Length: 547
Image 1: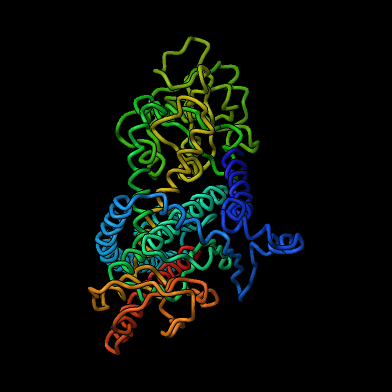
Image 2: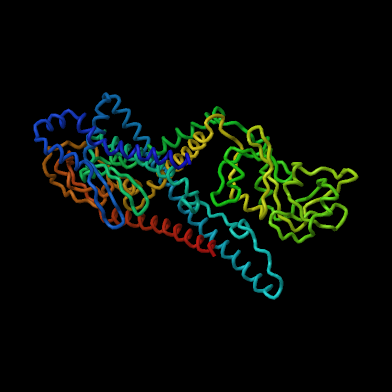
């Protein structure tokens, strides 16, 4: 329950902090605090209620505030002139990383597209072969159903994170927490980079598109009149923050030996069990599985997956000694009672139904050196019983599983290490860091794809614009002489706050040339087609697998 309750509590705390942030920002801003003293108390109550504005458009619900607009400038204002110059160099490095990331994201999208449709082709061939074999043998005995790994053997490449489908549903709160924090760090990059060029955001906005949360910093359209270098810095600063964060999280890996103990030589540590599995009551996270039947799962080889995914029957060597009278008095097979299992006498063909827990009191099979009043028995050939030997602290136990071995592979997740202290909390921390790294890298790459409204197309547009050597000069807070409606600005920013934002004027006007517009639209369309093709490929793959 900790992996569900803790992220929910942290999300609630984060939501309350964001809700109170505008009020705290207004109280700490000297100019605003002075202005509030000169206004009536009723206006204060009204303004507090309107600090967050909620709106809805279609399936998108958004809440926004402008009370935090001054925070980036106040943060940058704490830097010296040299500090600001170093900060600009830092974000200039982000432009180079953004160009490389944009190219890498495009290549990755093409690779994901080819892998997804390659998996669709392999899946279709597997279904066609299985259907053909079923038609040929329709008058004979039913053919054995292939296991999940035989039908779904295709490798789709890039796998989307869909809670309840590709990831456990209980991971949803942790995934949302990691995604929200990564987006906040992303948007902080845009705001700080813009503040270095004296541009304040119009508002901070949080949205839920159907079920997907997102955050954005909306800038006034005056940002489109910044120099090319400044616009490129602002475009790549968000992904640059995500890349730096991903590198820092990756560097935390050196702490792993201090927090985790390696049990790979002894076996595999249980990390999670499917809520719908019958093993949920017998195994717990942290249990150490040492043997499957009489096969040790310790060592560098992945015996766990190899043994459970194999369709060959296990080799039985040795047996168990039971009293002759007990074996003779037991009912003959087939065993109608669900708690009884068929055992065969070694060296004979006689089968009797015995209680498995009594026979398997000895954890592993031994050579058949039984006494005069005992008989050596083995599992019947038709029985599918898996013995899972487990260490729970200092206590050893044997869990019996009746059914397909592959079901254990899909229901039980294992690892080679276990936390040294605070087991559940450490496991959740590792899960959160894994999703945090994944969200940071995903935001870096996805936002650099040249799609409509992303940082990638803003970078592409900025690089297409001719560079200007003459710096911009800030104008007064009066309506701009340039058009303020620009459909290519950041995050579809509104012009409502343009009259209160700094204006920038250049010796020449900025206008997108016809060839630039056509090239931009061609790149946007091609990239959108690749992404849509990948989504369609995954939809086809899911449809084939569901059948």
